[in-house]
Length: 359
Image 1 (spheres, rainbow, N blue to C red):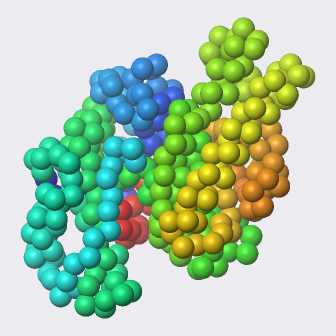
Image 2: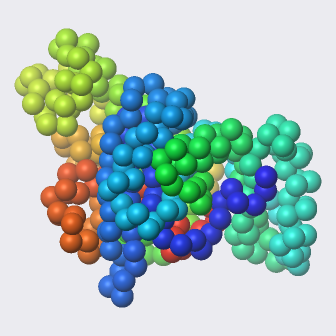
């Protein structure tokens, strides 16, 4: 299964971000004034149905998607979802620039057989030509992407259970990076040479995507997320999980929680970010990050933006991919204001309807 894993230039489709705690869905259209938000929805996922971004119960996830389906125009049948970066292998390889697509595909099969530690009939592959190789113009840089077919098929099956047809299965980190297109106007001093780091702090996993001139140049995932903060609240104050989640979002917590729970979590988050930025700088050749965009529910934590700006020396904002969009009549502005940061990946997936991207 080589083609069809990551397709391009598709009709409008719903971007569906399948997370461990909730599923977020977004439908966009394009107007002469930019993008319009035609549909947006989220619903919680039954506990254990998705663990560490991997679907454990296809029927349960499909049931949630089926309910979300009712919030969108029935004429839109296509959807895009994404696999977690931890289940994906990507590698840039060099190939003869004169090769046709068919010739390149045959060569990719040979290369993949040597690079991937699984039998080719167990993986889904795709590739995209990035551009000419800087060192040798007769060669082309080609991005090879592979994931176990079972990971791809689990998402395809969940979308079909939800009455959608899966058109694109993307990679979460690349969808996250793509959402920067919607937030350029919010980034101070942004230019084509700017390095923008988008950090999606999920429940148990944090996804990093570094973007330069519209291209994702580096991605990383780290086993760290908002669930650690929730567990600390439960431990310190004897809360149930649902109670701790609500308190975390509303800020209705004991006064001393700032020192007992919030400060240790913030310290851990800063360490994770600082380490990843250092690794990125060392491996990529970029000496600094110009902007940091926080996505996910944890991005709303009290004082987190100013803290990261001060500690990391990087201009930091909370993601709002809906900023500047026109809204469909049935969408109230207040319905998206609070949770906008949660929809970065879903928006990046919805953008596959309009833009050609390497992944």
